[in-house]
Every structure is written in structure tokens, then in C-alpha cells.
Image (tube, rainbow, N blue to C red):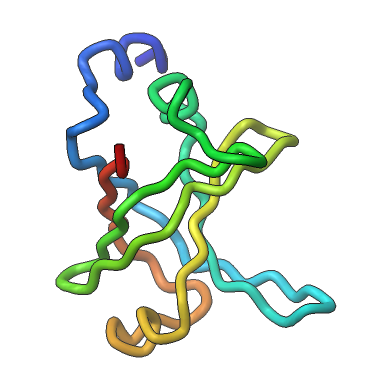
Length: 107
């Protein structure tokens, strides 16, 4: 199914979900835990991004929710969401775990 077809009936107020894997990136400033989000949401978020292309969202894993942003990945137009340590601890998530990330745009 094309991304245009999937996106045309979506609204900014909808709750979205992605089946994702917890990844870890080592950086000189410390390790980041994150998950990648499909580029399909880029079209929907046009006009709602903040500096550097960040798109504010409310993310949720099971019963744990927090305010964060979709952060752009320039090389493939996808996004990533950083998964904070307290969220990983509450949801008992480790690198490589698969889970569903739910999110709503903060508009």
C-alpha cells in the first residue's frame, strides 16, 4: 500500500501506532535509546514542526506516557523517538526489545 493512500485519511488529532524495536546509539555525549518511526508521518506533520524539524508528540508505551518529539533522520526522511531511562525502567525495556509505540501530535 502506498504511503499516500495510508496518509490521506489520517488527521493530526488521531492516535498513531508503530511496532518498533528499541535501539541504542553510542555517542560521545552518552548512549541514546530510541526507536525509528516511519517517514509516512512526515507529510502529515508539514507545518507543525519546530526548529530542526522536531515534531512535538505525546508518546505512550502501554500505560506510560510522556511528552517528547519526533526527531528527523535526514538520510531516509524517517523519524526517531528517544526513549527516556525512566520510561525504559517502568516498561522493563532493554535494547532489542520489540514493542508498540503509540503517539499523538501536540498541536
